[in-house]
Length: 109
Length: 112
Image (tube, rainbow over all chains, first blue to last red; front, top):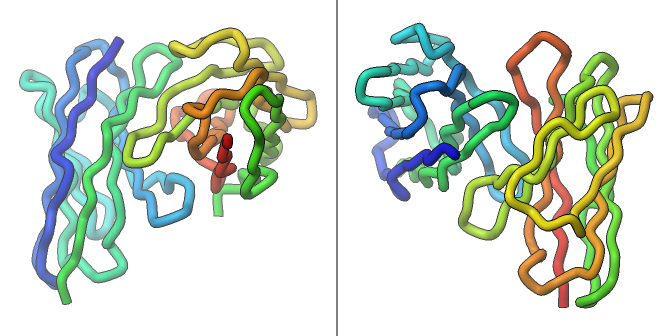
């Protein structure tokens, strides 16, 4: 299978940048995703990157992929209190998605 | 708004009972996957259906089964419920030819 790992917690001040990190084990993963989950809700697709790309930017979000190290990061610029949530990294291998355990982001006003 | 809906929102069942959870997606989303998310964990893949056939399964026993219908709705059935089946059950759908997977809001199942 695929192991996807994330750090559990991150705390930042409002207006700062947040960087959430993820590592995965299977180099045959084709796409890598970031999802956001707010309390009591389902998962919201934020962005995703094809495995042969190394960067993707979408408004305040920047995804960096280091395929050699199997390391993915999500940078959120100008973090707002509404960004407080759990962020999940996921890897697509074949037709199956493998999720990390999530990083809980707390934004301090 | 993902266009993916799930019912019911919450459900309480007793150990040994059976449960059916439902998911509806928008037209053209012919791939549906079901996930179990235990408290404090990431979603775990249960199985996937494509054009009404199961085409992938995670590490879940046969008492977890599913159906997909021509109208893009699907069901997750769980027999002989166990206490550890208490979790948030999520369905996620994809349109043909895309790799964007969209989740519904989930059904919170509590087994007592």
